[in-house]
Amino acid sequence: MVKEREQLNAEWERFRHFFKREELPAKTILLKEGQTSERMFYIEKGCIRLSFNKDGKDITFQFFFEGEGVSSAESFRNEEPSLFSIETIEPSILHILSKKDYFTMIESSPLIKQELEQQTFERLMYYQKLFLSRIKNSPEERYNELVKQSPHILQRVPQHYIASFLGITSVSLSRIRNRR
Image (cartoon, rainbow, N blue to C red):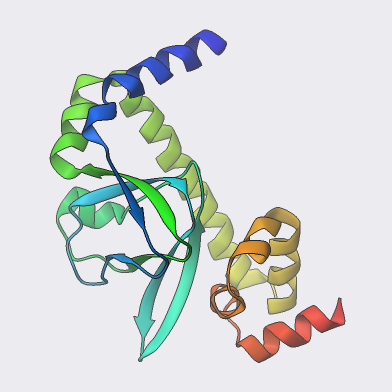
């Protein structure tokens, strides 16, 4: 296992020059809903949210933090308009990979391709759990699940984004928090 990790790290190092490092302020829009994605992002420092517009209302549906990669996968891979926006919440340091370099990298490295496939599978499992939680659980149960599984979100993300993520208003979130 250690040897495999070392090999994978060496592969990533081989393609390090493909990634452009950028320091960005909070509230930087990296991709607007409806645009076609040409880049993917790896977070060295900071927090990113994914959101979409529903009848003029901004809905947050996911957060990403240090060590995670983010993109609008269907837009990036299939050249379709993105279903959501990608925005920094905090001042962030990102490593940005172009679509051209991404495809060169995965065509040149079976190890990296396999790693990215594993990450995609893990993201799919996360979305399944999130989807089922939205159907099965009350807002209070979703909040308690968030406290238990992702307390870092509560420490770093503004309350109005957390409320949106949970599918409730900021007032409802405040009531739930006060009952604890």
